[in-house]
Picture (tube, rainbow, N blue to C red):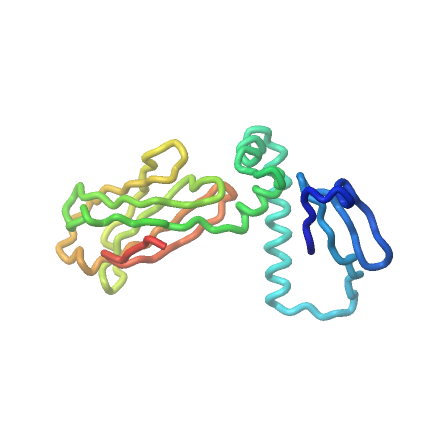
Length: 196
């Protein structure tokens, strides 16, 4: 697929050219692509391909539902660039799992009231985070909900409620729920650098 920008000859072109090329418009770009092939009806589909197809269908259904809600559609449209629609961003949000960009546990020394702070990256935003602090044998010490520190739900904080004398061997299980209601779990050890 090729893209043409500021080309006087091809600007605004759309449709088929011969039997090989198709021109179409997307935002401010003219896209030149090979003509699509007809799908092979009898070709067997692998389990991995079927899983991807099902995920694609789920993302498509989510994006269609999301843009029917005017408030959610406006939020996705605000995240879109010139060549994207609210539907495209909602579709991508379904596929992209949130990430813990930075975990700051320098203030966690195993005492009640100690804090864990972290930054989350997501297409739209994470709506809920559950933190579990485990010992080195992965036995649960405590769990609870983290609290967002900003309106965009990028910075979060969790305050410890149980004393943990062996805090240096702690393991954190961070479970995030995002706007499309996908659940993502990340496991990190005490002091592990989360910065990409």
